[in-house]
Image 1 (tube, rainbow, N blue to C red):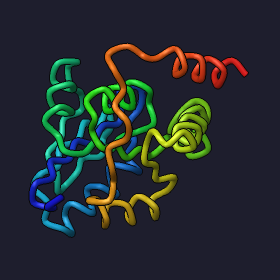
Image 2 (cartoon, rainbow, N blue to C red):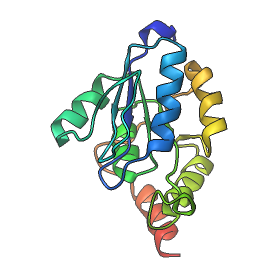
Image 3 (cartoon, rainbow, N blue to C red):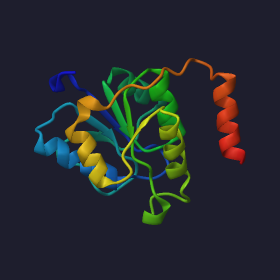
Length: 164
């Protein structure tokens, strides 16, 4: 994939901002002179310097940004993950960490680890790994398509994971 054809959509979700991830992407975009990055950054006082952004998007705006992108970079929230899989978008997630004050608990870390094990998503667990994956963005691949409705095997697997 030609790097000039990338259109990158970054999302932090609706609960809390995720400045750690957005800062790394913003620095990368500035260093690479990328003009094709848009971020939904949440309610935060920090503002990116090198990328276009909005604090919040309506559901339809979110879907349009995601659908028109070539790659999605986001937190490990299920809404972001399921939507990216549904539209077969290459997805790179960075889990929010409760240990860093980014979330209430470590459920995003657990989600990212499990879905990585299942081969469903690409994950960067820290800033160094995110920088490495951004430097090789063309290698971030689209995983299997998720249909309009989840298969029984997928819902059983998610139920087992959640309730065990």
